[in-house]
Amino acid sequence: MSLAHDPNLKGNVAELKIAAEAARLGIDVLRPMTEHCRYDLAFEVGERILRVQCKSAPRKGDVVVVRLRTNRRGPNGFVTSCYTADQVDAVAAYCPDLDECFCLPIELVEGMTAIHLRLGPAKNGQLAALHFAADYRLGAVAQLGERRAGSAKAVGSSPTSSTLFGTGAPVPIGAYEYRNRLGWYMERAAAGEKFVITRRGEPYARLSPAQERLRPAA
Image (cartoon, rainbow, N blue to C red):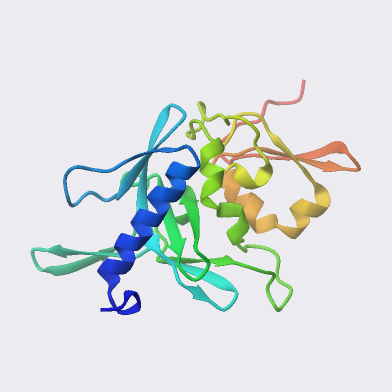
């Protein structure tokens, strides 16, 4: 049976491709020894072990479609559900049409049934609330240490596009960049990242998680 018609084969290929790409990037890859885990692989990144669910993601026109719904057999038939933060830390996707791997933090996709990663700008000119595939390439994970609020930190260089799991110090971004990708930066802030928006090279505003309490003015 061909790859296109065998979901199990597609899943196996995706898992192998993701593991190979992670290993190429210097990430230590682990695999559960028992079945029925909610994650397929584990990545040792800095001081953390990230539980990673692997998906095969086809290209549909200008987007990569990552389906996040999961089906498992229960006592009364198949049970359909979505991934949550207590089950996995990230969803990795392999697109056979591009031969590329992507990694999505659970904070971005928790409870969702699917997400579209754009390969180019929208035809209607929309900029807000879009997710660009280039921002979620698997290579970004290799630069990260821990990700949870309060202890998250980056390892090595940390360009804006590589901070998928949160960093410590605020990342500077220009006002034009922020305006054009408002939705993406709001998602990252909700996931725990902090940004300083600059105008003409000077700090202008700050974007941070809603849970963070700002100090009152002196």
